[in-house]
Amino acid sequence: MASTANTFFPSLSYNLNSKTKSSTLKPSSPSFFQTRSKVSVRGLCSVELNRGRVAVSRSSRVGWRICASTAELMEAKAPTIVDVDLGNRSYPIYIGSGLLDQPELLQRHVHGKRILVVTNNTVGPINLDKVVDALTRGNPNVSVESVILPDGEKYKDMDTLMKVFDKAIESRLDRRCTFVALGGGVIGDMCGYAAASFLRGVNFIQIPTTVMAQVDSSVGGKTGINHRLGKNLIGAFYQPQCVLIDTDTLNTLPDRELASGLAEVIKYGLIRDAEFFEWQEKNMERLMARDPDALAYAIKRSCENKAEVVSLDEKESGLRATLNLGHTFGHAIETGFGYGQWLHGEAVAAGMVMAVDMSYRLGWIDSSIVKRVHSILERAKLPTAPPETMTLEMFKSVMAVDKKVADGLLRLILLKGPLGNCVFTGDYDRKALDDTLRAFCKS
Image 1 (cartoon, rainbow, N blue to C red):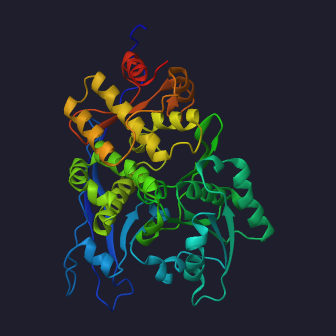
Image 2 (cartoon, rainbow, N blue to C red):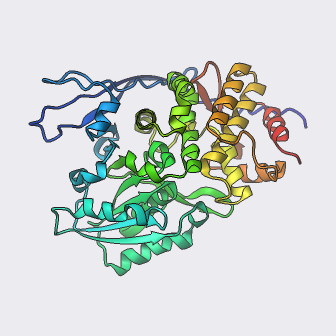
């Protein structure tokens, strides 16, 4: 095929300078045992690559005490707080061990007297009673309903979504009610979309129970369902009142789900946080072994990266799209291969390898980055190629309806420059895309 250059969309690229602050408060404060990580951004420049490394929140001396580390916080069951700064729609992300045993964290974000918990038949039997207790302990005026959905990506559809609406309407919930998402990314996306739509919008809270949801999908307000022709094509941007990440919920997470979530952790390092990627290279075995300190750090730093991007570009006009590295290829795998056959992170991992391959073919990165990406994904027990049944035409047909298509032009997130830099662009040689697809497809 002849080489065709895309010249209609310039690449969108960013250079961010950020500061992150945290503090520890005295016991007399109502927020004692909480550290707060506040993301603030000083500058935005649309001239070269997306550089945006987020500094690690470091505890500082306030009053009489120094908080030494995230590990210390977890032992004290003190939530670390990362703020998503969206003006009057800002909200906290609480991160820590045993947070479901601190009912005030959830109850402060419930504004009415009626609550609907949306969960699935895997998470519900383990965590539903604890969540209901956290919502109602010392709060007898609140009543809680629940709806338990089937578990899996293949149920992220309109028929399953209607079960949430059925329960809400049958329970005569009003506009002051609160929906609570208890589960992984599928539950969070569907509950959020239901909250955005029911009575034209009610409050909702995210309680993510998978690594994937804790580091990515629960933060930022993307909600929705799949269509048979494409993933997440139906949905809304709708922000929660808070995100509560109790890391204890990961104790029962299957190993495959753990690895799937790490794909999104790796992504942050590749696109905007080279130091975080280097930390992952040194600590991947600790993450795979569920070391609590390593997991707490990875979740926190991922949330800081996500919060900063969402604060700058809530509705994905440019910068936020860079969080989708590998997702265009990955969504094609999920849609073409069948929803639920591969976990989302598995498909994204293979998609990132394809995006990195294309970046190298364009001459935008050197071979060392290609090798490092392969290595870290293999250590995380994630796939580095799509399923053999995926064909060239399957990729092309699904990618043609991707949400990042504009005026008929497919825009992609690709790496460019040193590690931690990327571009969101439609200005690339089409031959490189075709060559990448042929390299990974048998037909």
